[in-house]
Length: 214
Ligand code: GAR
Image (cartoon, rainbow, N blue to C red; front, side, top):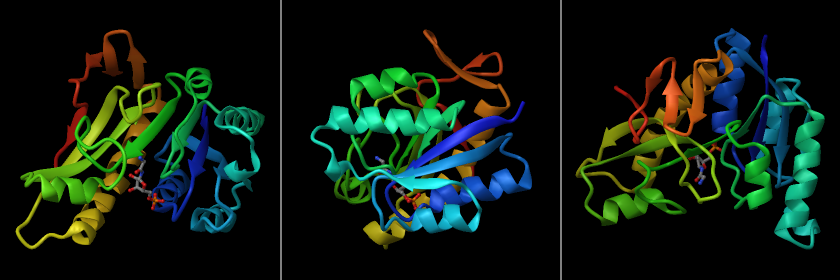
């Protein structure tokens, strides 16, 4: 059965666009049934409208607390009856209650080779540290910020001439490869998280996840 996906965004939504494209091609094994943004001016909302996907804005600034916002968010998400909730540039820290509600059915993409560089400014931090490589990770979400079990990573070498913008652009291209793959694995029933770690088919993935080679 085709899986129902809800995507949460805060901005440009280029990862959302990639998921839309793959869904339309039929290789995501899932349909994006709703898009929710916490920002009214997020360009991802236009992408959703162009693809005729129902979308809504839930502005966190109109709620008294994180918990109140998250409860309203849960209500809206659940109205779409999703099998999978995908965070695609959703720049909010989630409450424990929210994370527990969707445990095992909640994915995030992060622009670093986790566990390195949780949080913000990941590209500049990789440059400042003199790292030889950088990349991105898709992971299941747990209560630890950017800390859940990793599903897949892709790497790129850091070049002498790189600055934060050039690195970000290359990592973005990699994000657009690994997110649809992780979502398609989940939607086709190949991926799940267990007490032993992340399982792809019958294989337990290493703690750094599957590595997508260039
Ligand atoms: C992406 O680079 C994603 O990895 C990052 O936000 C960007 C959203 O881009 N997410 C985080 O930093 C989450 N901690 P997009 O709106 O074009 O998909």
